[in-house]
Length: 338
Image (cartoon, rainbow, N blue to C red; front, side):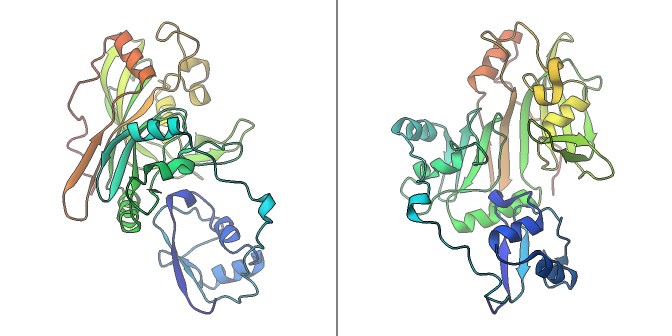
């Protein structure tokens, strides 16, 4: 590779260390050689110098200097017998995915992701949305592209780009934090302050049961969430509207626990305090976190806003407590994200 190139980080590459991203892209480029390129400023992220441990985000642009072809030779292809076939998508899965479409035009598709569906694959995860996106091509030759993510157990509005051009401006909208995302959550207990902001840095902590986010003002990344109590059932439970102003992993779950009102069903962050009897039948409840609304400005200056109905398990809980899931109104209407 004898010329400078610039590569844009996609949603599926987000939150990777820069050195690990290089290892995947250029598997035979040695770590020492990469460190020298970083130290001398030949590799840059969004025009700035970066260290090996720098965490990448969607939409960032990585400058790749001219490299010796011998150093960046691609990994040899695996024998055909060793290549795993793409997961088969059944007609039932295709029909269910298409039925989840809330909005579709020439540029974007917005679906109401159901809880329990992973957005991308990983260790031990072979069934995921990314493996089923051919079902949402409709009449387009291009496969839809992921531009952001939701946790496996979080339901709600998820945006897909239908074209490469749309993927670029959507990725930039998420990167610039100009996309409005409002979540609904059912928490155990009621926050002492009914409307406010949690501004608490979070860092990843490895564990036997997977990574979790913990408060860490020294090493963590800033995480900011606005919240408002929409309704509550005495002091037993509260319906929160939550708007993340940053996009950290498990941010809303970690911040709800900081308020001492963990999200119902979130044992990872709330432990036993995240459960109570009577709201659901058939065992412990699922996570009660839903991406209710997403809104963003299109390149033509028009606003697109999509609202996702509650999943069945949350609708059951809303009915149990007498909450009106058809309630309109946005407690964050005055918040300007620009």
